[in-house]
Image (cartoon, rainbow, N blue to C red; front, top):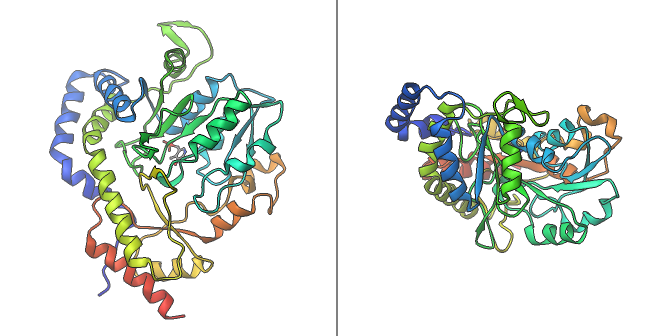
Length: 370
Ligand SMILES: *Cc1c(COP(=O)(O)O)cnc(C)c1O
């Protein structure tokens, strides 16, 4: 057997809800509210309820939502924001866009998330906020980070771009920080048919300011209170997201099914399998295994038609764009090791048991042959 298994199959998801999407897009075309509008407003209300928060605002990307989340704390030149070097680059862009400096702290080897034990040593008088990520869908250690932030009177913002519906001690992520940001990039757990994002918060004043910053720093048309942006979510994307949100809980359960099946089938291989920290429920955005021979394993999967990806091959402190920050190899050994060892296997709700078994067989063959 040499069946291919894709890394991600968006077509399978669209197929299942195609008629509903067609109808929703046709209605959006009829109502002509192409920027924000009623579909976005309805989705915002539903997404706030889903995240168990008071306010949700649609943005045109997760990156722009994160940028505004930083602006909400008046972060600017000379300021520092503590964050993780092991994430998608957009987490750090939000800090850089404000002219501030990302200050990296290494990750926890078990969870890939920001290590709370290392945060305090990185705090300086210039520190203005902490920006941790719920990486791969697994909530970071909220209690530990909240305690440090409270002690030092610092806000924290959740980068929840990969963690729609993930739970920490029974509570959905998004309501822990001063605000939280989500991405609706098509490959995320909840994806638009294009770009999209959201900022959620329980604080009415932050919500009002974020709403203004999203729309040119304006609440009354042609009157601008501060320098803002065009970060509005499109009406079409609101329509698509409104349809998809109804399926998100079910899709997250399916992701969990896939993860648990991988756990079973790969348990007796030399791979390090992803774990859920006690008290958390991952949204299983990605299923990331680890092995020192990652590159050879990747080549073996590629050769056998098994989709896979490296999230992320280079930690942020070693990126060319951040050479000016003055970091060097060895500064964050846990993140650097993770970047050499991590490999994501196919993960999406529609993955069949036969496909999962095929992935496991190819992985097992790799270890048999050495
Ligand atoms: C996807 C992602 C973002 C950026 O979201 P976009 O919608 O692509 O702009 C930010 N942070 C993390 C961790 C992400 O995975």
